[in-house]
Image 1: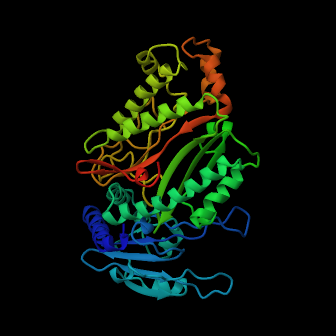
Image 2: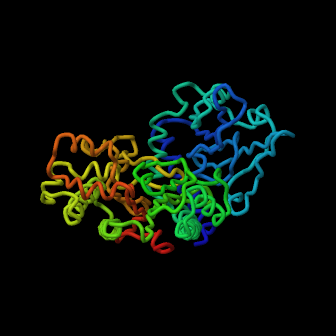
Image 3: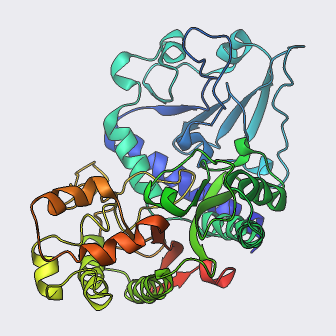
Length: 435
């Protein structure tokens, strides 16, 4: 699990991806900017900084203002920006295992960085700060050129051994924190206290997390991206969707925990666990993720009928879309330096898009699976009044409303693992560290 040993090969792969993009688009080189702090509107405070994902996919140097200079056949160059500033601590340069792969040039002002750049004529630019690109002489059409981005995004769709090892390290960290959070829940803690226990076990602050933790007790579990973390205690059900990072790479794990008072949820939880593992077992190269998603709904139809939440046949439930209000989100997504990593709808390096089916608009991944892809498998079953209400108001007799209503106080169940596709099948990274 030592990701440092795989870094040289990772940089070679990134360089190959860039060189292919340059050859296809005719640019002489590429500048990737790490980003700039983003101020809140009408305020002198800034949102937490995150590097441009295309920059973070190259190296784990954090902080705004850095720039990668990339050209065909040339060693990658890092212009590392550390402002001479007594208000804020500049981002420290800790090249450790990765520094040997770059020519590193330290600069302490925007002017010094501009002088350190090569002639930018014929260069493309990737980054959020388009004003910087213009100041560097980049022509408008070369700023975040869609074709260049499509090639880079396609290359990020499959992960190097370095990236997979980083996600594994993040998973090992998150597994310990999930265990601590579950123990806190069993002791009757509030959502906020459970979240704080997670952070303590991780040794991180909120800003270090790859995404805002979802820590939902009882009915809050029916809010798919619940964030409020309230103070009420002694919940019967906890849904926790929480990750961790390693060298900028994320894991994304969801578990649902029950106390004895969660009457009626044990059967649903056990059934969803079996469903989730059945779906994971099907993963292999060459299969369409859209087909896996459809299979999730077929299995969800069987589950809902077996638990007598629907009173029709499983085939009728699937054909009529009765599973969709219970499972309204996509089955999974690509994972990397972004939690919802890029390229999930992309079907070629040139940027051809495969849109999700009309009946499953929230599906974030429509590609055929390939070795090296890292993705989530996260089925859920929820009682969401907003989605069920049209069926209730129409008097649809296929829905067993008394049984559904008995589950309403507990919100819902979701189980999420992170899986890497291998040449012969798959590897469930999450289950190696967390049951």
